[in-house]
Image (tube, rainbow, N blue to C red):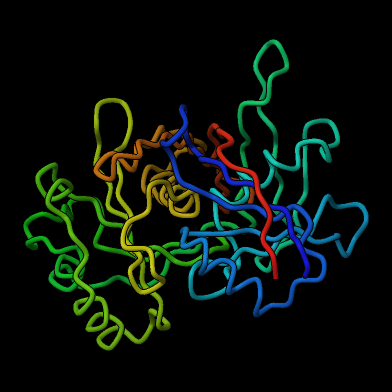
Length: 295
């Protein structure tokens, strides 16, 4: 019998049982790809991470990220949470993770007394703006009427920066509250827009006071709704900077409220001298469980 230690924690959380849940296997040596996928499905969380030795010893680790159904190139809260778990490997407060999307830098956050609070990550690639999706089709996916999508600033549009592309929708307050993903509409959207490449996740957002309120739906990947989505917050921050034309910007994003798992994501973006836009996202982490998986 083989045993593999794991920990779980709540990410982008200010308290336990908030934020987005994550399972981390700090030493995944000996696990096969199929076993990693099976464990991720068994945990039934939006993502589970598996830590392996880095290919380049100058880096901290190689990190593989699995959702319930497949391996991911990059994701936000898994990097923040894995960085928190591997804090003892940091050099000058920084870890570097090798991932399918590229090298991810994780910067630890501590309070004045040195207590570890969480981490901030940089998206591994610059903002990429993808195809637009018709308003009526996007609204159907979110289970709202077309009038619930605001188009004064932009149409429903795909954006990414190293992870799964997200369909960004600016919505009204009423639409944000009423949204429920429609799985059949998701499949219709994939058939109608081949440029989506068979993948579709919705990131609904709206202005709320000085910050933003968001919800994320990814039912095709097994996540009906996500409590906190760092890999959606970074392309959103980058896209908002793109719209503004500014050199840099920062946003606090509240997510997960409708699920009873309130989350706070601190996102920022900057424009490089070459005009490319890079984004970061950070937040707190709270440990929850420790245990072993037997295989």
